[in-house]
Length: 267
Image (cartoon, rainbow, N blue to C red; front, side, top):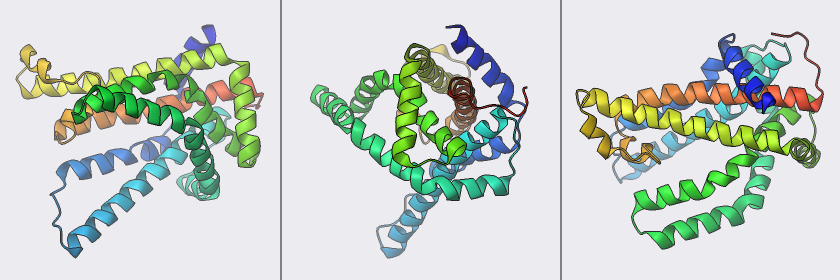
């Protein structure tokens, strides 16, 4: 447990010493704000084309952030600075392997995902209830969170192929299972706290701090009912940005310690 607190404390300290990482971490907020302000498109050809363009932009922003944030966190952890141009080059370089790794991971976890969805739909036919049940069913999978980041860091550190990288990440994960599983669960709990805090803040501010307004909040998944609320999107987006950068920094420190990668300088 000492390592868990060490990674959390040092990770929180490290994120405030970086600048470029916030640019990539904030990209998903742009997409969320755009969708919150979005006017329902028409059903004609131009409306369909606009929807396709919006989906494409959303995927690109999410993808650039997905690779850029852990790359910059890893570079900072080993004491190497990286510019925006270098980060974009890394995103282009590693994209194919990240896609392949993600698809393979999805195939491995697909039985768990489909089982969770099936159980959720058996319990309710209401979309909010299905979403909440599905979220709760997936919670145990958070113990494998480190595997995702470790597979990314393996590409950055060793420039290895997909098969070898996943094997190395799994070996590293199982060797420190108790610490990394605890760290994964802790990070998911922190993420939920961020989201719930954003929902509570939104409802209190908009209701004039009327406590009874909190009865409207979906505490399991606040985004289900507040996804079109501009204030919630802004507050929650800021929280998610901090969390994404924080999470990448925490797991980068864990990878650095357990993989034996040598840092160029210490912070």
